[in-house]
Image (cartoon, rainbow, N blue to C red; front, side, top):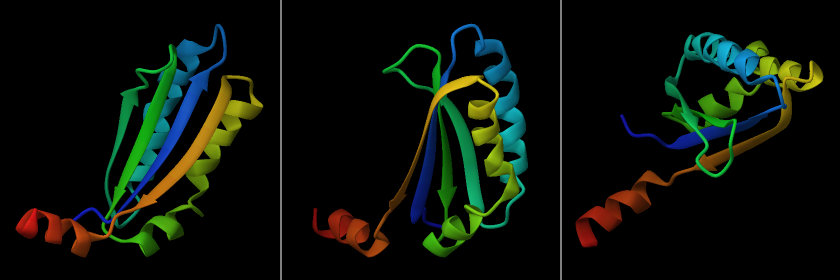
Length: 108
C-alpha cells in the first residue's frame, strides 16, 4: 500500500506541563490507531522547539483521512489546550499524488 495522505499535529507543552503532555499523547495515538484506514501514527520530538512534539498519521487515501477528522479522540488535542497543558497546537494535512511519485522513480 502507498501512503497518499498525511496529517500532522504539532503540540507545544505549556511551561510546567511537559509530563502531562507526555503521558496523554500516547493515549490519544492509541485511540486514533483503532481507526480503519490509518496505516500508522507516530509521535516524534519537534527538533525546532523545546518541549514540542509532532504527531503524524499516514493514510492510504485522502477520503479516509478526511473522514478521520471527525474522530472523537481528535478532541483530545483541543482538550489539552483548554486545560492549559498545551500552549500551541497546529494541525496540517498533506496529499501525495502517487502517480507523480511513480513517474519520478521511473523517469527520475
